[in-house]
View (cartoon, one colour):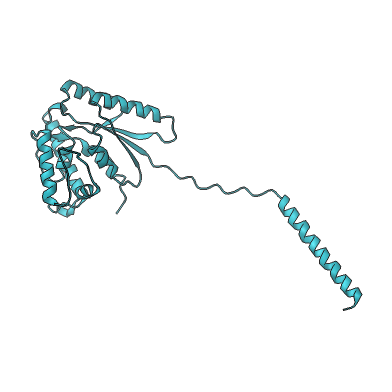
Length: 251
């Protein structure tokens, strides 16, 4: 290559190099496009379930795996009236937040509460827009209805617990429930409560069988004009479970 041609080639390379540098500089000085905002995840509505029992009820509700709602189950060993007041306080504290409670439920038992106080708690809760899922005598009666078509007559807390324990053992000896100590709802026990009832038409889950039994008992008491404190045995927990069912994953 002639010297003159070589110099011309070098000049051409330098010119191209300067052009690239200037182009890069101009590109860096241009305003950057705004980053696309990440999609905002829509939060599920939260259902607050305030329970008088601190073990059985809380464990039971926390086992529900909902798709379109979140459960916040809390246990407070309060009498029904104090439990209602605490529920009102929690609902008020959550109002200014970005995701206040969509529903607030009070779950409590008649047990030894006097009729006047029991009725006062129910009436105040309902008047303030809270929802009530009471049992008379005990929450265990709701669990019992998963296995036993009990008609709703008198049954003490102790007898209810003993009968429930016997029925669970009879259905599956590997699943344990201790009615006199702990009263824990294990995942295995919850699965047993959710399993299909072999005696039900269409293989309905025991939960839906219990809902039907509890609703029929409640309607029978109401038709007789019996006040809640004297409806032994009964449970309104089925009303809360009906709401939870609406948020279960579709199968």
